[in-house]
Image 1 (cartoon, one colour):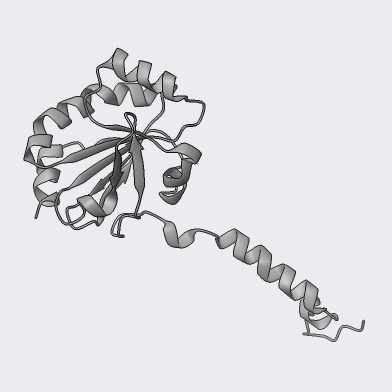
Image 2 (image 1 turned 60 degrees about the horizontal axis):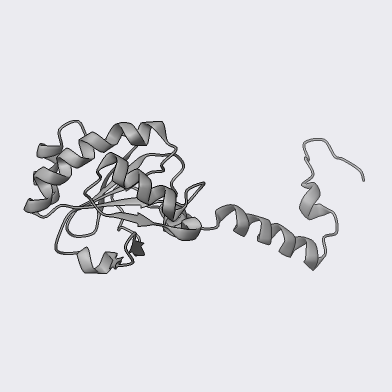
Length: 179
């Protein structure tokens, strides 16, 4: 190969490339971008989901949309920061559930069994609904990368908050969620 002054070769395309090489590059790029459309970021629509509560009852996100604001908390029994949030979540649930707020605790079933989760609920006297995300399907759809993760959705199904902490002034935030 001869290089001319001022010419920087593009080795990928100037060398002979067969169709398999091209499709390999496309495949790698698609893998790298897989699932981007399911990101659950602030301002985006909440991904649809169906979850099974510990006692077997199912809940679908479509049944809530347009009616109630929703607070999702992704948690695990072995997560210390998750345990620290329980008192606050129980307080929010008792105050705002009668005003229409739905709280759903989602356990991604990573190193947690149904039996372990039931014991945890009983020990900590958790009154809000707890769901198991068997296979972490919903957890992956929301792109949860740490526990706890709090996702708050307004009554129209738009994500308005996403963080590892609860909002500082939930009363103020709740009013905006119901508008």
